[in-house]
Length: 193
Image (cartoon, rainbow, N blue to C red; front, side, top):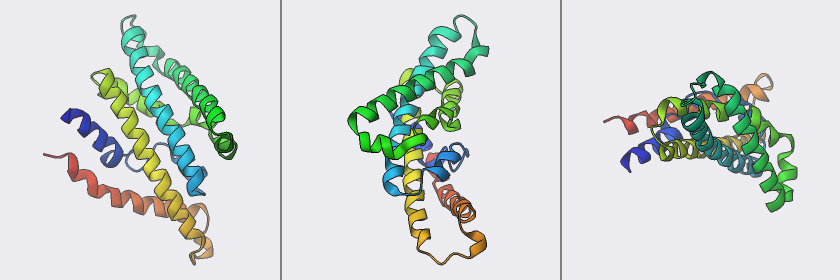
């Protein structure tokens, strides 16, 4: 149980996908204009990350490794991720058509989010069992969602701030992400003994 807690804290705060591994920057910059959109994208991405982490672990351990087909990992994981995204899109469309409409193109683009493929590939290296893989995917999704929502709140605040013309737009967003990344470095001591 303690190992699962360390995995969760590590993926949410210490080794955050966006701030430590620099994965998923495209949706961070694209879907963080409003907090409502960021929250919807965070939930969808968390669901996809968790589902694809578990499914890719199962595909790798039950199919690819026993048949010595490890060289097909990337292609297999892309298919798993595409299926997970389609399931997520279908679910969101049925549960909340307004959220589906507001997410627009960003929802199918979760398929091309490097964070989702990154977690699937990192799971093959780091996870010892299915529960650890599931925890790793869930923690990565929660960490991604946390940063996405915090960044959306920061960007909403920056819209009313007096930002110099040369820093407006993506420039101030990237500077803010860098400062946020340095702030999250303070969590690095949480997992050390």
